[in-house]
Image 1 (spheres, rainbow, N blue to C red):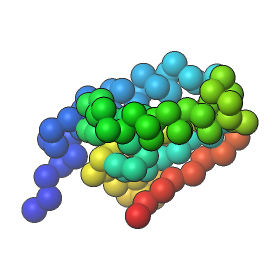
Image 2 (cartoon, one colour; image 1 turned 135 degrees about the vertical axis):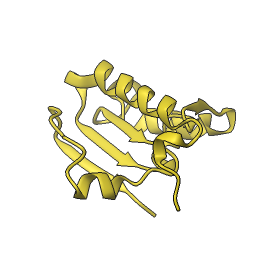
Image 3 (cartoon, rainbow, N blue to C red; image 1 turned 120 degrees about the vertical axis):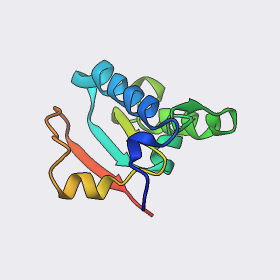
Image 4 (spheres, helix red, strand yellow; image 1 turned 120 degrees about the horizontal axis):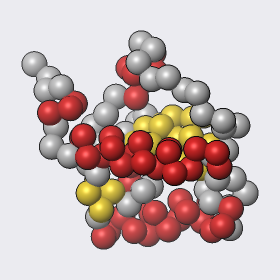
Length: 108
């Protein structure tokens, strides 16, 4: 039987960090990207923990999805390694009420 995501080490910490990201950028978000580990890596983290080897990925994301970093739009990446975004979106557990232009999610 699969372990509930809240019991996975680091999941709660990553979830709290995602909440902080959206709260800090609430009125300045054009694109919300939802996903799992790849999307979390765009923040330079893995299960909520900063990872040095992912800083190049974070820099790239900031350049593409931050108007202050040179991008055309302001984006926020809300991902958690091992999470199942499609399940939450399809069963209505995720309420999307953000003032954004686009929403996309990536699952591989």
